[in-house]
Amino acid sequence: MSCRCSKCAKKKDKQNTIVHPTRKIVKKDTEVEVVKNIYPTEVINVHKKVIKKKNYYPVVEKDVYEIVVEEFNCGKDKNKCYRIW
Image (cartoon, rainbow, N blue to C red):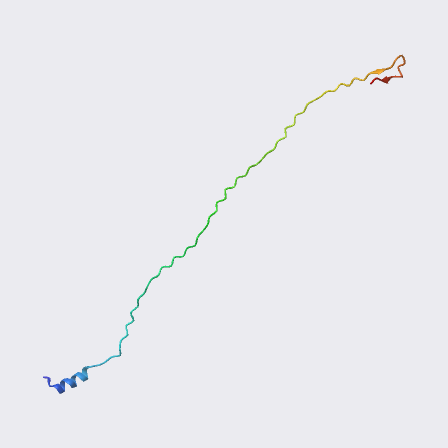
């Protein structure tokens, strides 16, 4: 049997007590911050209308007949004729 006296108890406590180095515990606290990135985009819709102008120049042909009447006075001599105005 073991002794229960105070001397033995102190001696026994000293022999059985081992002090280890301090254990470090690192507690981490993480904070999440949300940063919104906005990249605006502009869409320009160009509606193009092309108007083609076609010009036509129709040609109408007409035939015009001119009649020129020349009047001469020749008298009795056929070689001496002169024009009458």
